[in-house]
Image 1: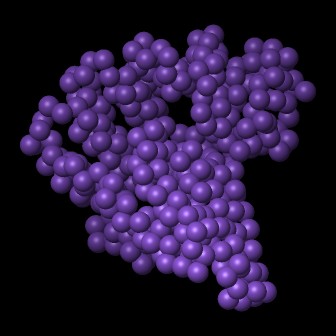
Image 2 (image 1 turned 90 degrees about the horizontal axis):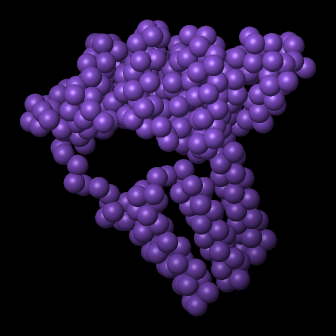
Length: 355
């Protein structure tokens, strides 16, 4: 499930100072969502440790060349540590792009600090300058103009303008499946499930083997609480991509809501065996399996699922951060009760008869 919001009302400012879109707090929240709670805490700890150490060196040794060299190394440590934390959350192609940006900068600072310590400041400036330049050098400027305009509007929360840009692109290239996928996502963010459904259906017509199309359609029907329609779409997605955890997870989640416990248990267990990469989805899988075992009176299995759920406390923190975002309105409507139930089980506010 992805997040969605209602469209911006006529006359409402599209971002800017009123909503603090370009302020520090929204930027920190977005970074927290991207990194996840554990990586974000590690990033803050790294920032604090290197920053305080550098400040202490400035106070105690002032302009000492040795202190300056150590401060440069602390900066390199911060850059490299941040790089590891960020790259771990990126897909492979983006990882390579950022390696090309950051590695030359870090090497320049390290070599400069060790070989010519009296010119450390110059090398630090050059290294940081390369990061800024590299962002522009390595950015993907090949995307169509309408795509770039849609992404820009989406980031501002102006979903109607983003949809209009993608509609222009679709008029120019009406048989490009990926255009309909992106516009469907924008419709979901805008809360227009009927239009999102139509775009996913068109995507399925253009690419009958697209599990993405049927997974998206299943999620739209789930948001609309049309559970049987959601199950049918999820079933097709799973048939097309039986080795993808997301397809098994979506199908099992929908079947659990329909109380189709045998099928739900099988597909949720399959999702776990396919190595779900993030804690927040593992949390929900354990919750749904716990419900199934509770309904069956299988207290031993329920206890195992509860133990698995409690091991995913980081996933609960991730959901709490994500659910606090403005874009998560539709996501809250679908998953908020599940997340609250998981929270209550973790903190012991609910009675677990298996215990």
